[in-house]
Length: 138
Picture 1: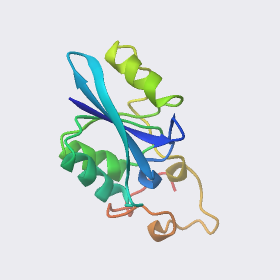
Picture 2 (picture 1 turned 90 degrees about the vertical axis):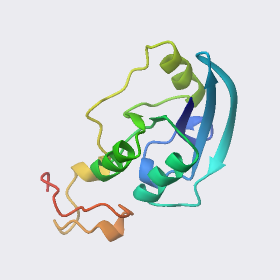
Picture 3 (picture 1 turned 180 degrees about the vertical axis):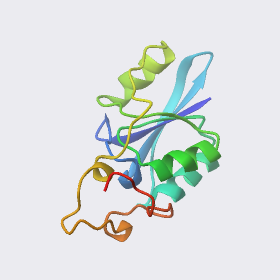
């Protein structure tokens, strides 16, 4: 099994669509057998889900994540544990011990606030390829 975690300086990066690195953990017999940090090359939500699928990730642990990215991960068969913060290593250890605290209803912070002009323009915050036209919280 492979677990991917949004990564920045050992901590869980809090915005999936803007993460520049993932820490990838290879798991065997419920133990970490190896880990490595990989660069994302600044890809958007949909491309990040594709990258995780390509490397064979089974699980993603992250902070905030928007609905479009959640759908892309679901389509890729990657189980999501969002709303997590703190150390990447500690989060994976907690996951393996079946006591990871996460939020099944997590959303990216920028999806829950009013934009300066009241309009929502995905091009300004890197939503990537998902359809932002249906936000009901604006």
